[in-house]
Image (cartoon, rainbow, N blue to C red):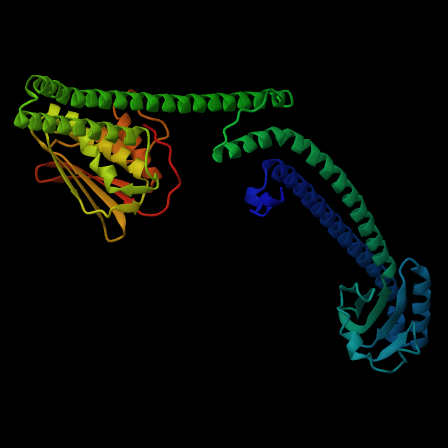
Length: 485
């Protein structure tokens, strides 16, 4: 699990992402609900406080208005004292009555606000007539009211209110709400995580098998897993297992077709080798008969022995080339000159059957770092294809060289019309995982896969008298490859 989590959220298992998303949704919903409740509570408290403050100021206005008109300080003091006793639900720290020019007539705290003194400007700025100013950090609220008689301003009324109790209630409600929501969030989140985790567990199983399939290990879902999931996931599991079986069948079919192609090619080469061996055998038997009848003649004996030597050497070359190609020999990680020299003997039967001319040109060093056996197989398949495509009496040419990027370049040219489009696509396109239907194109498919596994490339072209296939293979160490055909 930690290794997967390092790949980012997108790499997390579905069985983790979906339940975690449910938990996050529950947490977000709880936070939003708490915020809405607290906001509503704050608004209601402020409206309630403003209503109380308005009622308090209304009472003070009624009690002090006549005295303020007459500028009777003692009656103003008396009105403030009576009003404060009537509004015990509102904790006013002080109340102040001033004239329109800001001179204090009376206050509930004479020591702080003496009569006939100016209202402190710093304090006066906190009051906005007709509205309530609240400072939650200080736990205070300030309310002001203009005193008017017949539309004429005759004074102002100021009150500072202690709201610490109101804020304490708000904090208590917020804490209670936070604790309750936290407990419910944890409980609902845990239940949601378990339930959703259980629901998406089958998807986790399917995703795990798909990852293994991506890594090359295609494994069917075990039968016990079916009993833990519902019907809809059972169907998905069955379809996945059907896919696994289909892939196994295609893989087995590809291997079987490759084996059949190998056997067909071996049969063709065996018949060619039998032809090449049988041809000189008749002459060699005649030479032996001649030796038996005229062996005392030195010239006849010499010519007969030379003929036997050439015939046996030809048979040896054909047999050795075939053994090296299909039994193996030498260093498989190196391409030698002998690997290319044996190819004419392997295609000799096809060439003679169609009276083809074979041209060979190689500027390669004696040994290069390349998969010798694999390259022999690639060239043999392409040469046999070139022989089959060439007209009677035509020319098949192989050119081998190193290019400027130290890559092996092989050019197989013939005088045929070129590959049909479907066959050309098999040879030059992205090699398919499975061979084409039937045996047509199987050798080209095998060749394309071998070249791709060597990180090489194949291009088709034309020359003056026909078509050509160009194979380029980089020179660098490669892993051993299995011969497909």
